[in-house]
Length: 183
Image (cartoon, rainbow, N blue to C red; front, top):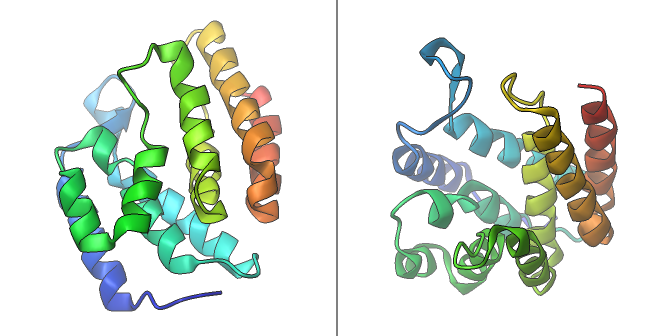
């Protein structure tokens, strides 16, 4: 495991993403059911930490930075140029690959994203799998059956395209897909 990422680095980037995602929530429709979005970021980071412990030759620095920042371009006003300045070209390229191209029609966004992710190091593949693992908690109660099925189908597509990138996370994603079928 390549690990030059210090606890100070961890705290600095956590502070940055906490500020960038401040006020963002997900979950239910009323205030008591909302979850702070930083919870999702943390969950993806935890998956990457576990993957790093279970994966030989894993570039932890790249994976953890991309995990922290994976939704930054998509969900905040943080400039891409600053992303490269602060975290380097590899992190910028990884985060951009993980970011949906909203200029494409919705039905083409996933295929495009997976194509761009597969051009990146396997650690970026790992972040995408970790992201979907964390998104496969129980679906919101207000989702219709068709939306749940579509989300499950997307998870299967992610699994099929990226499973060779990280055995540990592929197994976790497969298990989450099976569990999600029963929710």
